[in-house]
Length: 77
Image 1: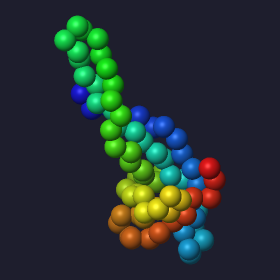
Image 2: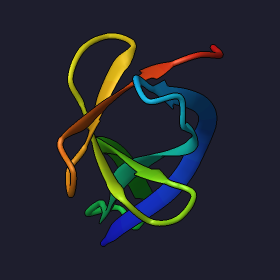
Image 3: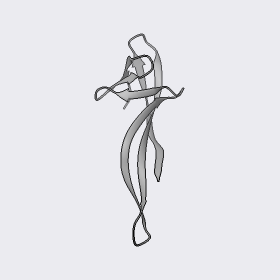
Image 4: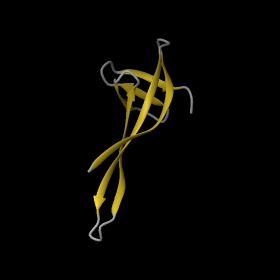
């Protein structure tokens, strides 16, 4: 079973001066073992703005809003 959890958020600014709140999500795969235990494995990380726009990581502190190709930079850790 695939589970997605929000694991954090941060602020990012565009070159035009707009500030975005970026929510970070981690996917987990939940697997039932043969002895009846459930184990979770980390999967992909995903990012979205607080308004729901999909974001891709471009560099360590740079992200790209997919719909506009606008580059935004993380301003808080």
